Amino acid sequence: MPLFGAWIADSYLGRFNTIAIALGIDLVGHVVLITSALPPVIKNPDGAMAAFIIGIITMGFGTGGFKPNVNPLIVEQLDLDHMIVRTLPTGERVIVDPHLTTSRVYHYFYLFINIGALIGQISMVYCEYYVGFWLSYTLPTIMLCFCPLVLLWGHKRYKRVAPQGSIIGRAFKLLGLACKGQWSINPIRTFKNIRSDAFWENVKPSKFTPATRPKWMDFNDACESLPSSSPWLGY
Image (cartoon, rainbow, N blue to C red; front, side):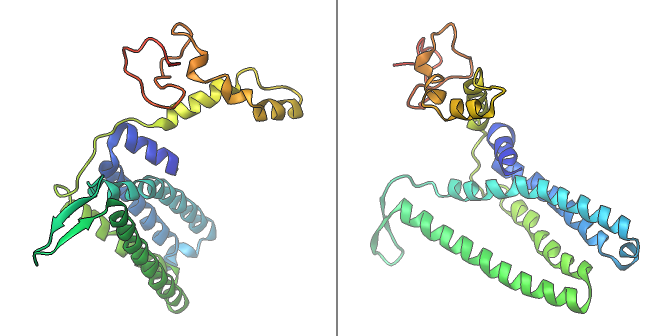
């Protein structure tokens, strides 16, 4: 699901919209999970188990759209790509390094993630022990409800990059093209074909002529995108 979520964001919806939709799906999954653990529902083991499975699967779809796009969305807000000199309100001139800035942002990002995970896991265990699983599941659901509010607040504040296409589709097409003629009834022969040096060598753009080259192969041997007017990919 993370690969699918990243592909949807890069190809169609953009990261912000994908995260917003994924959060909605995730919240539905959390509600179903809470329902599966309610005392009236849990008296019916089969129904509770079915609701539990549906909730987990729904949350998997939501998390798969959320997780792979949060980190890139953070990077998009850091619009520095080279060092600059910035003057602080105190008059001090400092050098801003984009690599150090990104590293510091992610250190704080994962610090608060781990703090939240620690507090959440401890509190959920106590809720389950003294009350029940339904309250244990309710705690993260309440915290997740703040996420749409944050997105709503930042709707016009976030820097949003339009979808620019994903390499995942082309990567699978390239893999399929490389696998043509490599399969055999003998699994050992198939393994050797796939492990041979020619497996990827034969699908390099320079191995094709303009007439035989697939339309989706718009890159050269160095994996650089080529102008649409370029007649040959092997330069």
